[in-house]
Image 1 (spheres, rainbow, N blue to C red):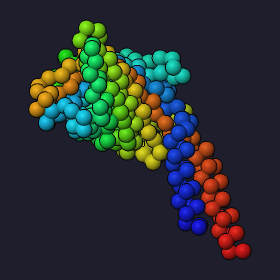
Image 2 (cartoon, rainbow, N blue to C red; image 1 turned 180 degrees about the horizontal axis):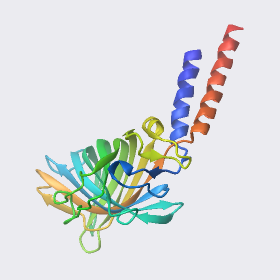
Image 3 (spheres, rainbow, N blue to C red; image 1 turned 120 degrees about the vertical axis):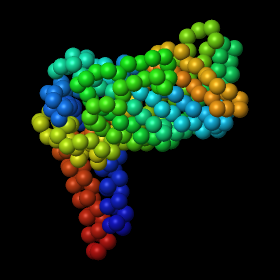
Image 4 (cartoon, rainbow, N blue to C red; image 1 turned 90 degrees about the horizontal axis):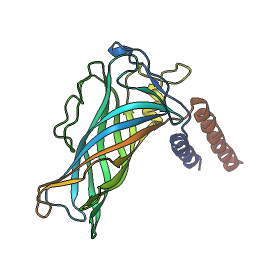
Length: 272
């Protein structure tokens, strides 16, 4: 019984901690010759390019591998933009990319005006970068022609927890769609992420931090190749935002001590 209560306590600490956005964050970019950013709780993604590749055609149940790039334009605090990445401190850029973002088509819905593709994401990794020599640019929709998105210093490595989305390839009206991705923050450098009190959040982010990414299609959805027999690609360009969740250290410790106390009460009752 004691072991079960301890396990439940640990799971509740992790689950409730990740659901509580307690800390506003800022970056310390002095490691690449820059100062600290403004405090933020949200990042606006100005441009996101994605290419989903289907080796054997596009059909319900077909698996895909997705690669892509993103560029973060501004930070926001409580929904208010507080700084642009191209002019905050000095000239620098904030970019990211992902690879091996895998999943499968769950449903294809044909319609008079076009086709809707529904899909789930199941695995993948992503990396965020900061660099003081901006040179990243986007070409057409898709990520094959985007350059300069892996230079600079890595400030976070993410691992996918889950995701889903939809892309609508319309014939006569603008295309649409969305993507939702939930990421686990698995690695950040020391001396880069802080809270408002100046505490280094490396350990907290790696243990409890998550990032939620929401995107909307901002340009055409394009299907290339052979969608029946493969190989085929679905290209899209999106905008969106990313929000970070990390519990307040004091709240996390209080919750943990309370749950462990409940475990101790259960153990004493068993002995009595």
